[in-house]
Length: 282
Ligand SMILES: Nc1ncnc2c1ncn2[C@@H]1O[C@H](COP(=O)(O)OP(=O)(O)OP(=O)(O)O)[C@@H](O)[C@H]1O
Ligand SMILES: CC(C)(CO)[C@@H](O)C(=O)[O-]
Ligand code: BAL
Image 1 (spheres, rainbow, N blue to C red):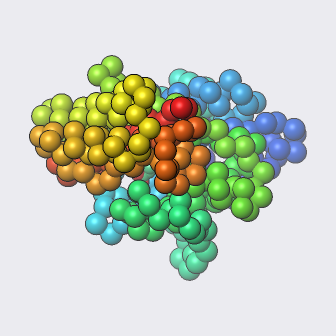
Image 2 (cartoon, rainbow, N blue to C red):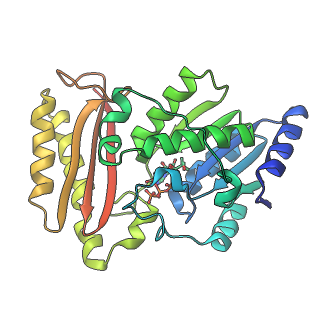
């Protein structure tokens, strides 16, 4: 496995691999790898000749009061994990490589899908995500790129960017990997104290309760949303950011529960903001 820090070098390698006819899979990450990331890499490994994993904590997608500075980082450990699951190239640029002095270009998906949920709570977040992801695509020339369903809105926004800009990359969304007790794996789980770690279980439990209501025949999205919200609000240590029950393809509001449905929520557990969701076909 090679670790590449320069954008020009990574792009040169990727263009050469493409000329040689190799199929490239890209797994974009912000590092501090866990089994969720590894599941994306393993799928990319099975489906492509070459696997590139990017490891870059993108300052552009963090708000001024968010956790860019404290976001967990451990490049050495990440490189060992990446190598153990067959990554060929780790692309780990410094900020100045991605955004040199005078950098001025941004990519933004405008409209309803970036205005709600995490887009509403984190203004500018998705503009930062789409900008870095398009840059990563141009630097690494992937045929396929792998994203986790845990960041469901992110995957939908990236699909929209790729469609609207005719980007020749196939977007593959992979299922959420969870701890045995149901908590979705997330680098930010490391912020939780042992008490908060227990309190955080309210999030997957409330979403599962919403799913159970639907399985038992509930068709009113507002009733399901309220039930999830009330469960969260009555859970110790939890502050609700948002709860939605929306169309799983485009995040639009539903008049009735039918087809692809996404139950998604973001909560604060102490100072830590966690997101989770369940998608189902009704
Ligand atoms: N539990 C998970 N299961 C599947 N994919 C995941 C999981 N957690 C993260 N991913 C995916 O891994 C990719 C990189 O995510 P990222 O590095 O931000 O990790 P993270 O754990 O989501 O961190 P955080 O949520 O704390 O920012 C994203 O596509 C994300 O959706
Ligand atoms: C896609 C991504 C790597 C862009 O910085 C990030 O948003 C993430 O880790 O999900
Ligand atoms: N996993 C999404 C990256 C972020 O929260 O900024």
